[in-house]
Image (cartoon, rainbow, N blue to C red; front, side, top):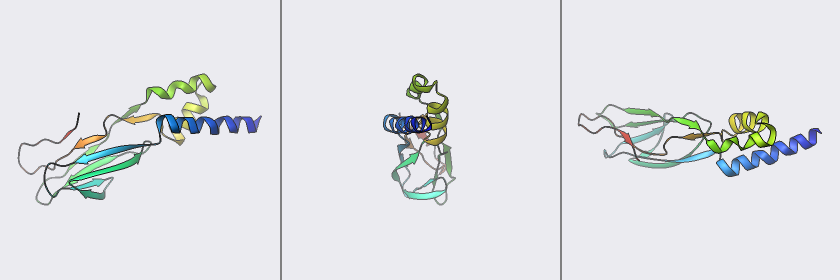
Length: 131
């Protein structure tokens, strides 16, 4: 009984990871030359970066240029609709609540993964996300 339950959890965990993934790929660009891009306060590059980030973690993007005011943005997340398939497996008790939500974070997806962020250098450019 316990072995069967463990096997069921492991199989479902793999399915959730394959279907929804545990990470998302983000692209951040600045239109202001020589702008440093920070991911959760760690410098990742200048002017343009592409990176993968775990879905279950909070993601804060920040751009910095000397002489300008930094711009910071916390990426908003929402529940992924495909994660409800676990209801058919075990009424969602283990597959959705434990595995998809707590362990892999596969239940969450970011509202946007492509961003143009500019520091405030006194001009009228407003930081925004790509559509």
